[in-house]
Length: 275
Image 1 (cartoon, rainbow, N blue to C red):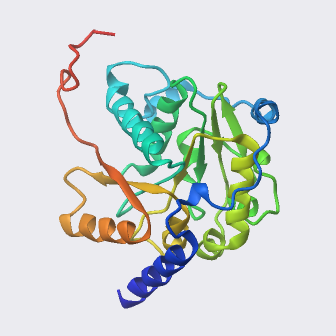
Image 2 (cartoon, rainbow, N blue to C red):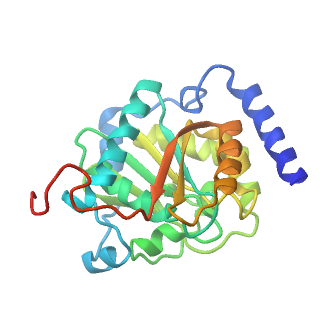
């Protein structure tokens, strides 16, 4: 526990020294590409091939609107509102422990954002140990995200586009030193280059569970805010308290997502069959 707190203190000191009063998305950005160049970069990304049956089995329901997508649509709207009013772009999605549904939340939120016209979103798998986003989406590949973040492989080789305003950054294969990669200056330069080339309005990061390792600690100082996903009836209060304190010491807490919560069909104001 002392090692963990020491790592948090170090990361927080680095954040305070680097950021001052500016958010991560506001400082030291490379000159962005022109609108035409960004549009060309988006269209050059290969389209992702999805199977609706697999998405349903993985509990990804927001490709189309409907009653089952309503909770994530509400989350999408709140994320957009906070991001726009605070000037936030980089948003990490974390959880206290594994199995909370963090990756599924990222996928559903990303597809929900894709249905919002005028919002460009990149959702990147930043869990370099497990690479769960590709599995949830039913994708296979051989490009490690660690190589992308190390600047060895262009991001476009790991990118797949859905529609005209959503790109997934998918990695495959476990990295040997994920904490060092996520905290390196090279990875930060890579992210700034991606932002300059593609100009996303929202940059989502699917992060490892907080209790599993120190992978998050350095990286969270580089995002503007974080969503904490907790599992109903499974995440203990003490676990959440520790997670919330860790995250708040490193970045802004955008909110908490209560996942796997049972609700009635009319819980979101629509009777069954409204859609």
